[in-house]
Image (cartoon, rainbow, N blue to C red; front, side, top):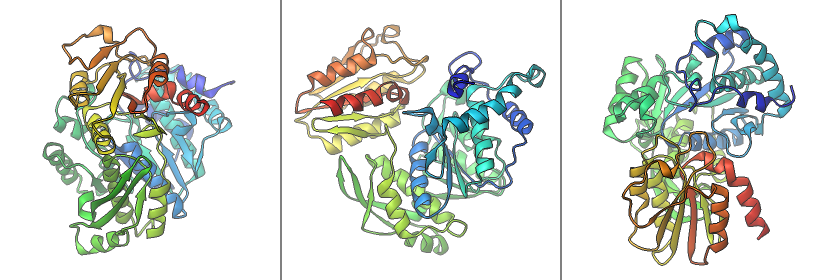
Length: 450
């Protein structure tokens, strides 16, 4: 097999007819056929609409600096496929991935194995490969990010995580998860297992009530990140933000655990106030698991300062500013707008290049991005993604700030805007993580050459 990624990419992906088949039957059968055992693995399982990847990136950084070997599974990748599977600080090698695929592919080709339930999808196969990889590496801890939803997501094949984490809930993938926050919350809360520990950063009452109900049904102990810490922002810049944790409202036992992290000297290398919420949730998780996975204040401080998470309010050039962000929901756009308002004055012009996938609430996204009366321009275009929205499909009566450009490629449009960028202009690309996969590396290279 020349290229294992080429084979994986040939499998049905989300957005195609056979690319989305919710359920755990196929991944269960695939893993059973490999001899996979979960016995020696300890998972932190993370679901939610926004912040999953950031919370995992922060946890990875903190636990690694505390001396633990950490496995990490995320999706999608931004730069290279290998980012999806990580162990002990290193992405999976092509040779390791090739070996896993060589083991799984013959099982995929046994038609009798799948005739009653259909063959596994791309995401199911990659998830199975990751779990099989971790079962052989046996890291101290595995950070596992759900794909779509939670209840029927392939990652939910695991049986007993040390903690289930639900970040925040937003209206997304409504055709699959439901058209209300409550319905989506129930799908996300499907990762909660009986008698487990659960922690959430959600504050909105509608989804929170559902999370609480599912926790009660499973006799799970539910905690809220606000119980552990309150956040006090000290200073913010394009390089990151300084902040303080102040003791929250948790009972005395957990309050004492949280106290070891309360400090005036914390720095988070990620941008945006939303990332402080993600940092709070991540640190609440480490406090909650302190007995099993002890983490010192110095490890927390070092982990926060060293966290890297490409494509999330990422400043790829500070002067004049160029920002790339993978936000793809109205709530994500609100975080982006908040960041722009916090860091740039009304004297600076802002140009936003927007490319989204089909099925997104584009009208609401544009309403959020249309946040100032002047010196704002939104250019709506299309990416190369198979599910990319084409501006030709739906011309709305948007404000004069919105320009449609369906004919210029995302990369060419970005280059054109970069070439025309003025000293007082902020250039921002957003709308999907797939945009970043398409152009991020070339953009960083182009900026370095200027």
